[in-house]
Length: 360
Image (cartoon, rainbow, N blue to C red; front, side):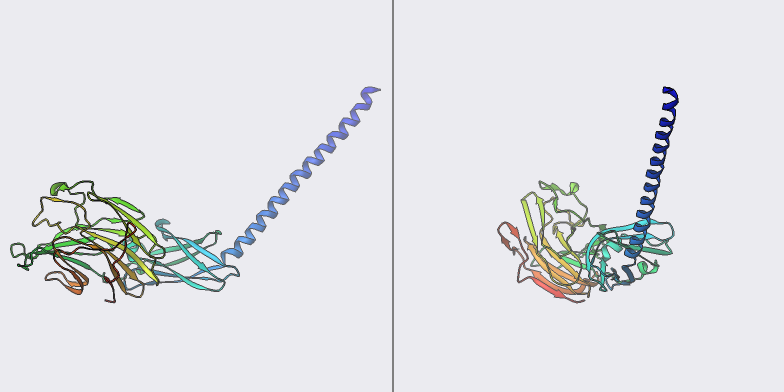
């Protein structure tokens, strides 16, 4: 009797457990499917809230990418990607900050110095993707010709006069700040029209740099360039401090925030002893002249001197149209033996009377 009573009870318990198990599995599947469908619906709506509307090539060679928020909430574009549209190869990525209110049209600027780093020669098209902090993305595909459109780079020149008696004793460097390409010329008659060519270092995404800790022989110079270009990672939109170390100590350059639509903001450090035609015995600090150059998207240049020193006389030229003899827009002269600097609280600031706005 005992065995006959146990069997129906066990069977009933097993049936109940199986039923519960099936219910749990079914509930889990329904919940998962519902969540997936809901997420797909939300993502679909979110993606349509950001729309790329076009790409423009700026006169400087930079790109301006237009994007509109067509949604109902504010979005912040924080990243841009550029791909080869045919091979899905990543060509460029950068962080940005662009806040767009509902229905607002805005744009992101990629400076010419960045565009110059993108090799679009063998591409038929490029795909530009903008993303936001909330995961919203928008893509825009355009012909690669937009990357290849010709533009005339604005060349900068720095000239050093070594003698106040013989004006032929001078040398000058002409450079393209987008690529770093430079050509150095000697003005004396024994070296006419023989440029020394090279590529200047372009330092990006750094706040500190050591050129050398001691004077070094010419043959052991740390860089084979008279100039070093340092890109301001804040693009002039925030205050930024750049620290420079050399045999004479530590120097902190305070770049204050600027107003306006800025494409690129950078420092130029120049060693005026650098001259392969008449090499010095040794070189030291690469800061005989330190100047800030800010390029606005409307084509205006802002030139601000931080430091200029030494026995040589210096000249600064913008928009060089002829390299030898040197022709361009003359901006200013540092006289022989003059020492220019503006130190406040241990920081070097721009000299208020040495700031120039020029539209080539």
